[in-house]
Length: 471
Image 1 (tube, one colour):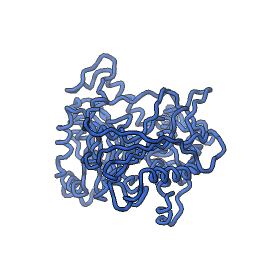
Image 2 (tube, helix red, strand yellow):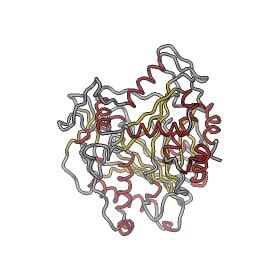
Image 3 (cartoon, one colour):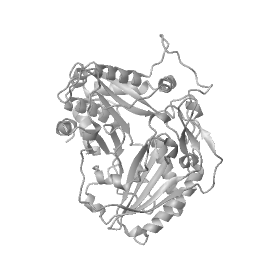
């Protein structure tokens, strides 16, 4: 990963590693995972940074560690799948969730470095990877903990909490709910919150393809509902293998997918203030900015799609796609229960040629995004779930595919494990680093922080096209 790092930054030394078991053990059981859960069983990480503060200057690292351990024990009693392991069903080779009470892993570490030396915490730094516990993984998911955490004490008196959770266990909203529940188990926050949190619902029954209550959709014919996002993805792969999309930075046409290369991507965070977003809306919609209704997500996604495709030099006749996650908790019939803790998202997809995308107005592109959002129905969810029932491969980076994950409804920066909110919450390197993450700006409530992985040779061009009309 070609990105900012400081080779001279002090090392991080692990001082303690413990297994954390639920305070109250639950009966062992198997929870059958949905196909949505099985897409990515790897651990996804975020790091919470807490700068030195008078509010907890009397708290030692050992007491912070002990508090986190105690609160996690209590949390795991209710969020008991997080103390389990994934297991392979020998009959069909699919992963399920074995609620085994084996526990999570909590690590204590120290560094002589100071948080201020990391400078802008919103910009990814390779050093951040040292602030999260990475269990050895040799392909056996049954040995991998589903939740891991590392609290690191800095020389300045500040600390970080790096937390990883399996994407087969939680999606983004459920991860937020779990972390909020963990933090809310502190005596301080129990007094603050006053009301009880939603009780999580761990059973995936409503989303299981083999559930007899799930309607099987026709696979072809006029009445068939298609998982458009998956259809578009297959078309993009076919296009790439046929060599129809050669841009200035790729050479292919040999029946093989182009090697864009995740390892060369630069992770860059763009700070988009509420004023910048309003400026963009005024400039691209003109006199209609007051009457044309669109969300900040729709506007920024359209602008991102146009800017990224242009910066990567995709050939004009090539098919290009924008795909983004849609929460389906209220889309299914009946809706998923309040507190559903599994993966509850599908990808919506909009497709055009690169020429149509460049020539199209922002209003036209926003309309395409709205159309893609409206297409997510109960039948679409069933079709998407059924389409994932076959073998799954690794999603390779494609210049023609722009992916967006919207975290703006998950205010991770408001999760306060002790007396105050973190200075910043940074996601670590994900298995698909080219995804653009839209996150809440911790300072500007109307602003958005967008992190995206880009090829180094495309970074300047993207920055130019993306920031045009925002300043």
